[in-house]
Image 1 (cartoon, one colour):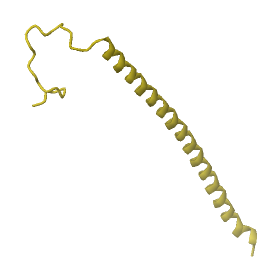
Image 2 (image 1 turned 60 degrees about the vertical axis):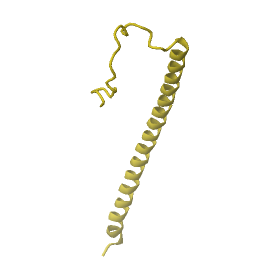
Image 3 (image 1 turned 90 degrees about the vertical axis):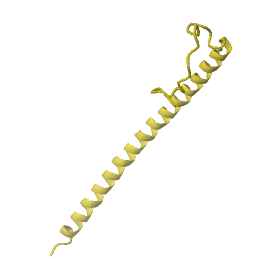
Length: 83
């Protein structure tokens, strides 16, 4: 059964605290390198997301302007025709 943090609830051996957990410097360096790569990828994705958000905001504003201009033209055409 899992504990509250998702750990398997395995018993801790007596005297295990403070001992080396089996990971050496190479393993920590590899994990650190992978985390750096993940962080870099996430930063890149965030930049792309920000760029896309800005472009979509520009498109939305452009569409609003076009719609308003179209509505104004439709509103003006009947009055220009006259009786």
